[in-house]
Amino acid sequence: MNMIEVTINNKKISVPEGITILDAAKSAGIEIPTLCYHTDQSVKANCRVCIVEVEGMKTLPSACSTAVRNGMAIHTNSAKVLEARRVIIEMILANHDADCLKCHRNLSCELQNIANQAGVRTNRFENVLEFKEIDDSSPSIVRNPNKCIKCGRCVEMCREVQGINIIEKIGRSSELEIIPAFGRYLSDVACVSCGQCSTVCPVAAIYEKEDIDKVWDAINDPGKHVIVQTAPAVRVSIGEEFGMEPGSIVTGKLVAALRRLGFDRVFDTNFTADLTIIEEGNELLHRLKTGGVLPMLTSCSPGWINFIEQYYPELLPHVSTCKSPQQMFGALAKSYYAEKTGIPVKDIFVVSIMPCTAKKYEAKRPEMRVDGIHPDVDVVLTTRELGRMLKQAGIDFNILEEEKYDDPFGITTGAAVIFGASGGVMEAALRTVYEIVTGKTLDKLDFHNVRGMGGIKEAEVDLGGTKVKVAVAHSLLNARKILELIKSGKCEYTFIEVMCCPGGCIGGGGQPYHTTNELRRKRIEAIYEADRHIPIRKSHENPAVQALYDEYLEKPLGEKSHHLLHTYYTDKKKKDCS
Figure 1 (cartoon, helix red, strand yellow):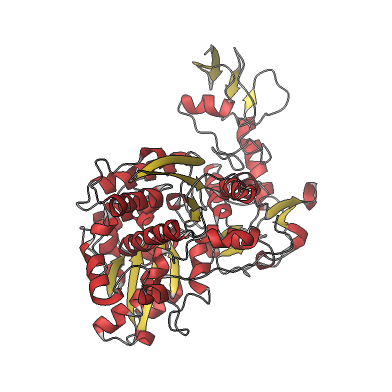
Figure 2 (figure 1 turned 90 degrees about the horizontal axis):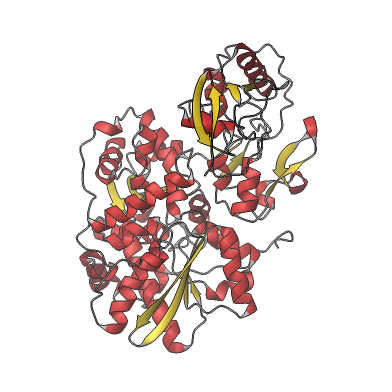
């Protein structure tokens, strides 16, 4: 690597040849403000907020797209730069709904932050925004074009990572818009509700549909018994909402915080993640024995289910009939739990804390009502929404003492925890299926081949003399590659895990803002760290799950299990799906 010398703000430093001014400045401890730039995306250089002054250049180049040269003299905070940057920010604000107090992203908005940093207190330009209709047609996502700054981050996420091109750049120059094709509503296009667009949006142009008030109403209703479940990935991400290091494992604090909000019982979705492994593992074995449709595809990720229903409905027979852990929990809460406590189903209100925006859609699916009347899950809050709710209540998350989940849905395993990471469902299933088939105890519980941020990971497992190939895919672009293999008849896998979001649930569309691949890796590390410290690490060894079968469900894939824990999916293909 060739090193060159540059001067930044009158200080000489050595940097690798070819890096950008932005990265060179960062290595010198100087943060140049950015808006359209995202560390995991291509360089766009369209907002111009990161302009700098380079001696010898007539114009002010953007730091994110300009490579350093040997001997280059750069100024990041000269009077010329600061004034030009302030003008650029003011011009962006002049075509923006700048009513920050009522904004969904108030105090977490990147535009607001850089405006504050640049000292923009008033705008010298007249606001020329022509207000457009807010699209709240989706059960999961809200699109507010009046907040959009046309940075293009959401477009790249939808096209390059998810591969579905739902939102596009339409028009040119001042007429440019970022909208679904032909200006349609989100509900009219093949959006899968994954919310990945919202994770990269720097403002509040796209965000999750907020349901906090519904939860407050239920908690404050004396006639409601309000219970809450928390997903595996939330315990390694909610701390970020309170300034904690990414990947901090805060399970006990999370439980304590939810009790202080007023929930009657605090349960762990991990319980039904273990249950999912028992049902899904037995379903796989049943298909293997009876010549069922293979490969079998997992069904835990609702964004992924939305994708296959809309884009590849002909392959739905490959999908496991198991409900997701969220929905299994809701079904048990309004059957087993209701019977055990004597509380009428109509009075039980189930809240889920999920890293996922598509879970909001999943909870509203008409199939997800075991009695045909009451939804299994009443409200889904994202990790971000829970953070806001805790702040509304004035709860100081950082100082809370750790508490334990309530019974009967509080005893869980390490296999359930790793559901939060890409490859976790597969690894948990292999831990159980191997021991059921062979009758032997696994020497090593860690299946490293299916872990990590690789787009498609594969492994081979010897199940009592039969070698089985398995695969793991995360992001819909990689899911599409797997489905095309199946369509072509060239797929050699027997069991495939698919997660809609990059990195799995730890990178879900409802996770804390400013998520990057680096943060995803830290959360994944924390997930496996939590697994290592749980005494029971195999789903089939969960004593509470065993007791549930003994006293209520009777057996995996049995009549009652089928009614409560399994579902079906349907062809929802739209004309524009391809």
